[in-house]
Image 1: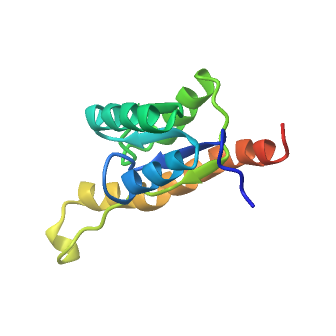
Image 2 (image 1 turned 180 degrees about the horizontal axis):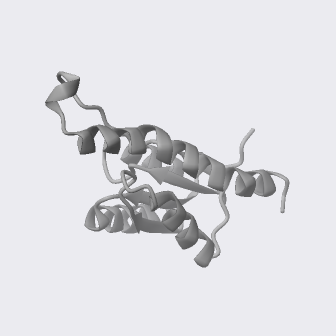
Length: 137
């Protein structure tokens, strides 16, 4: 059984919707949080609320996962703060509706970066940390 208390989760798309629900549920189990989304004020407010309600540490990192460099910047921020990672919740994502040609190429590219590239990049960058944490290192 996974021990949530005093473990740390990074949640993308954390400022609203399912990301906020994941954050609230994990904080209620005693898990520390690294909250990632595009909207710093909402992230800061959520981090403050969850830290106060549940006595956990919550860190807000503003990042737009449509930016190809975002995963590296997120990783750098986590490392510079000395945070370990036990769980990664790749929640961020969006979908475009309508005909493919009705969207600009930049919109289609952004969707691919958020839904696929960032997910793979974040997983690749953080899985080694999660393995070390699970092994007690």
